[in-house]
Length: 255
Image (cartoon, rainbow, N blue to C red):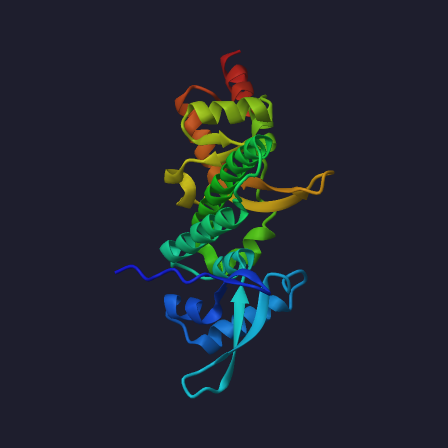
């Protein structure tokens, strides 16, 4: 039986989930979850994502807990191996509740049209964010305990660097990988198809971009691992597309 998703709309904090709920869902002692959250709170810019709170236990004694926003929940759960269904269920529910709170009955026809545009744009943004989260979770899961070392791995390469090996532009290689069913484009960003998420071919991170009008958007930065680079090599070789260095070698042998 699936558990009931327990996200609350707190007046002082907005949409949050309790650290007690997280502990219960992942089968950890609440005190261990609290320690993990307090370690995150030592990092910069986390205090606005995770809030200290107090609740009453069965004996009516005050106890400590933490309330996690969607971003706080995501940040904590990306460091926990497994529990993918729980992670995505809560991220999706956060998105749904945020969308519901933003919907208001329009007063005029013009307001109705503006709200419709905003709703469509928000739906597209949430769908993109959801797909990016799926890719990030699948990438992190096999190596959750090595997350820090992966982020610092100098062997990661951009699609532009790989494209140069073949005498292509990044745009041309991206288009070719799309035609070969490796990736698809959504809202201007290239994302891997779900059957390739957990192969260790890429490592992705997200960056929040603030625009001149004060609005924000999220951009995915994806780099390829050496394993992913080899995957592209084998894939293109099957299509009779070789890197420049191998074409040069062939020319020497046949001359």
